[in-house]
Amino acid sequence: MSSWYGQGGHTWASGQYYAIDVVVPTGTPIYAPKAGYAWYQWNTGGGNMINVKHTETGGSLTSVLAHLSSVRIRTDGVTQWVNKNQLIGYSGSSGQVTGPHLHWQMNVSDHMSDSNYGAVLNGIPGVMDNWSPRKICGTQGGV
Image 1: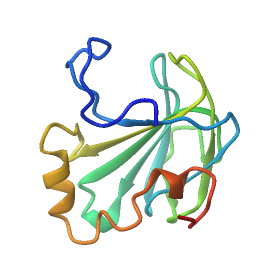
Image 2: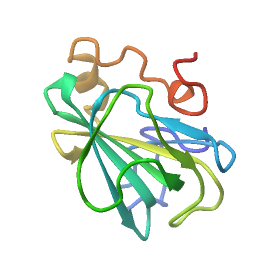
Image 3: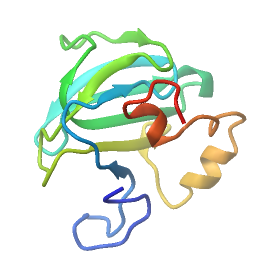
Image 4: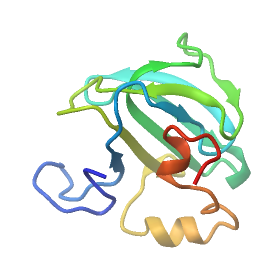
């Protein structure tokens, strides 16, 4: 990983980083970490991004997967259902980056996770099962 959750530094406006960055080559398959409703968005910082609102957590958690080279979901603004481990895109370096990687951020109740991130996630039964960057980057269902 090149950046990790809670890392301090002047690079981020808040002074802390609320995501993880997993260094992988461009074109590495990216799989949905859990089932949910997915939608595509583009912005200057994140580039090609996929958001997945995870229904098994009551819709309180949303994964944001950014800097993708391409996506395998609809790009017309329509939300679509994706299954856990479904191929949803490929890693890349779109947006403001210094190299190819996957940016994975978890938003809790539609807000960027803060210092309570771990407590919130650990308090939802089963949510931390299989939430591994290695499982969503290139090895479908792998370790």
